[in-house]
Image 1: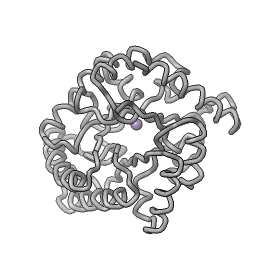
Image 2 (image 1 turned 30 degrees about the vertical axis):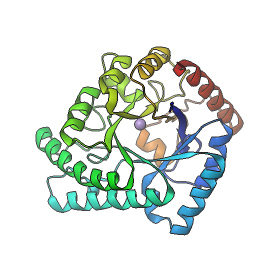
Image 3 (image 1 turned 90 degrees about the vertical axis):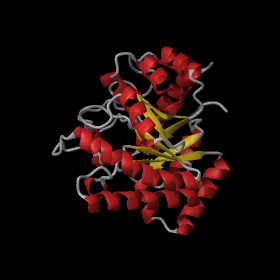
Image 4 (image 1 turned 90 degrees about the horizontal axis):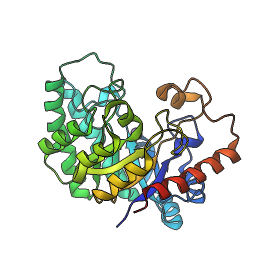
Length: 290
Ligand SMILES: [Mn+2]
């Protein structure tokens, strides 16, 4: 086993949904092995649509990871028991759809809702409820052979898990092989003292990595220590998905949620966007090579 490289489809769009069969082709053409999609979309897809997307991905040799930041009404760490129950059911339903699609990684802020509105600041209580709920849908994931990678995000997006150290503590409390961590270099750059060391801290709990520069440009366009991060990932024997989450153009719900208030692409057209992501992948593979 070795690292596999992927990208979120949203590099080419401004909505949290899209024609995944179209994006699968673009993602394969750019040289990737993983396509990351919006997990919430699976709930509105028929079995036939899931089977078709599965077939397209298989033909192209692409794995699919499924990404979600649940809305507040699905917060599994809510103080309201009905909301927690609804959230656990929501994620369990997604996991079943993922199984049909043969998507084996559920990634994102599943231990609470996203983005947080900071109306409840009782972190210890949120944490405790989160651990209990994650165990419940973690069991569903375990039975289906799916890995849940809890995404650690920066302080402006949640108050629950902001650092690798907190993530490890949370995973230890959950105590399930199906529940691991996702570290994202954009968030790490805000919260961690040392980026390579944060990967070492996550160690065996690390299942998925999101990559992007400090301003969410493509890897290689900014200042993050890619070579040193690659060394750390190889040191811990990381063999999960390394998935880009580049956000470089304004517009739509994506631009709003990610807060893209200026064009970071230098006016790139689609052909230039395609070329940029191909070059970034070559750069990243080189930096992360053993
Ligand atoms: Mn991310």
